[in-house]
Image (cartoon, rainbow, N blue to C red; front, top):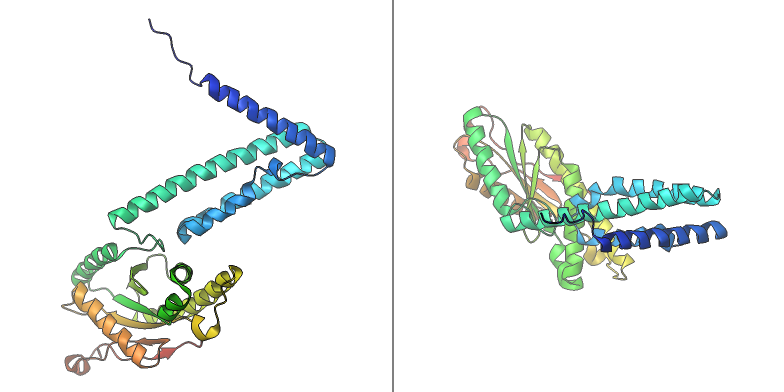
Length: 314
């Protein structure tokens, strides 16, 4: 009969014992000085830097973890001030558990994001839907609308002034703009709206079950979101020592919207939204346009898709 191997190795037990002994020494020193030193807080503050390397969608989810870690630090500080060694050791153990759980969560999320990027589901830079995934979903939505005759809108977004930022300050600055603007746009949308990055500085949105007026309202919110994201990106780059001036750094958007009509395909809806977007650029940028109605649409009692111009001040 073979001898059973221990569940936990001797080396692991010894490592845990060393860690506990080190924790006890740190707590003793902290109680003596009545303050928590950097080491006693396990260096969690320095881990905030991970956010720079994650899609915004993952970084946002970890905010609850940060609240828990702040509560554990407060408990550690209180225990040390009250000379309560047992409570201090327990709080420090909580911090270590949070640290390990956080690292594991981030590792899993990064691997999942990379896997999705490899599968073509997400855009690796922004964490938004990829072009391939967007087109697949839009094809499904067009087919659904063909059968059920519900409202469907496609929004085509092109950033104005982004190329100047990228050419002047480099790809890092461009990436900061894209990630920040993408986050602001996502926050401006409804839960069921699908936002995707087609590539470069082009984005698209599909909106189900929304009226023309509702789609236009959302598009106005997107114009404002792009401006807010541009302003935040400038500040982030200035914190890095990159002086982005208003002459180059102000990025806005030109937006075209198409509404589903009988006989539409994914391509026809995208083409009309794309054409409307170019009309918006020619109209002065930072503008929303619907396609110019065709003659048959004008004669239709429904009125077709009318041209619309909406500007948001930068």
